[in-house]
Length: 255
Image 1: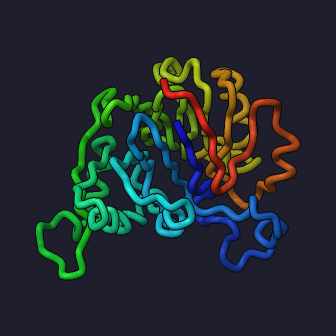
Image 2 (image 1 turned 45 degrees about the vertical axis):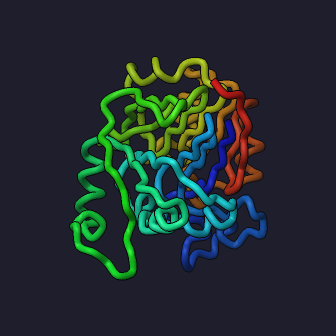
């Protein structure tokens, strides 16, 4: 299994437009973060989690030429507004792309991007997508996907477990039944927005505490804002926990 962190920023991206703070003006490439998205190659399938605002740039950088499925965590703009880039994959691969999410997420996507689903022909083309509501564990080819409900403030959204990897972005808390689904992980990718508390996201301290309960082999922190400087944060974290950076790759054994 090959996992690529396509982007690891919060909704503004880093640097933030017009900001002159030390992180936004840093020359360290690991402080330059595009919006959150993850790419997974497993069991011969290419799976994208969320169509971030920066998807075109991310896909070009990593030469992603085929997608077999898209998993949506939730419908916020930074996780969905790259959706129109999916039409390129329709053109290249001559296929309708299956997209998966919970009922609320898919309803919001269908409403927010009505032009895709209105049945009206577009001369310029538009994405050809098949929306699939997730009701439990399901397969993409031979790859098993387990949806994991997590809190994003008072909203229940999905994280995903694929094999021994789990991806939990925009997480502010994890219900007990979801904790049970996250045992025995080789890799946990979990959001940590900043040092200060936030009502809709774990901060660094809360993320580290959650990791202590789950005890994965490796944890990668994602969805980070401009308060977090890569080298400083890396030096502060316990063993087995590291910050993400755009383009970070992890190789895991197939389940």
